[in-house]
Amino acid sequence: MSSSLISAVCIPAVSSTTLSVGEWPSSGLYVVAIGWGTLQEGGSTSTTLQQVTVQTIDSQASTCSSLLNNPQLQFCAGVSGGGKDTCKGDSGGPLMMFTTSHQWVLVGLTSYGIGCARADYPGVYTRVAYYQDWIRITTSGAYSNATSSVSANIDPFSSKASIKFFHNQPLTHLLFLFFSLLLIKIYLS
Ligand SMILES: *[C@@H]1O[C@H](CO)[C@@H](O)[C@H](O)[C@H]1NC(C)=O
Image 1 (cartoon, rainbow, N blue to C red):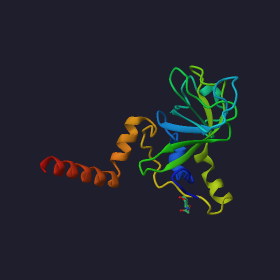
Image 2 (cartoon, protein in one colour):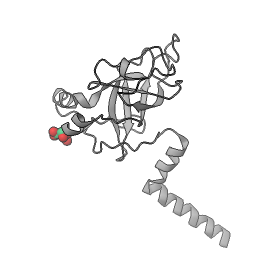
Image 3 (cartoon, protein in one colour):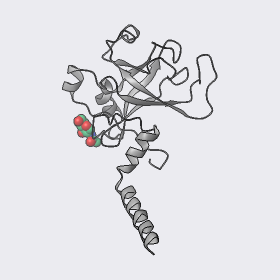
Image 4 (tube, rainbow, N blue to C red):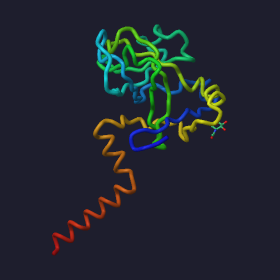
């Protein structure tokens, strides 16, 4: 199941040590949520799929800790000052992180929040890494492990990151070289 528009997301492959000694994902990482939920608090749901980039927040942060029932199973993500968030109807949907091996990995499941996009009220997400073994057993082989658990920590949808990302592609390098040589040839002829 893969095309230029759709592909399977990877399951985290995080060691039990990593899970027990600290938070995974750690705080301050760019993560992307998608969904057809409401476009604002009290608004109506979207007819087109939306995406939003937020950042993971330390479970002990004052804006987060009181929202969580269990920091082992949950974490917060949002943006400073509010304005970007998941909302009603997005629950159950994916929260994804882009890794250093250029894969998307499912780090969270949209769970709940107080209102939407309010300053100092981040969204709460299920910590998928905690359930990775259960997911493997339950999907009995119909999954892909993430090959890296390290975040590239870029927002792949910001224009700067896209330029950086595409410049890392060998094909783009070749095309760039080709057009540069063509221009030099035109200039010299
Ligand atoms: C995925 O990773 C887990 C944990 O490291 C491992 O037990 C499992 O065999 C891997 N599965 C595949 C399909 O690579």
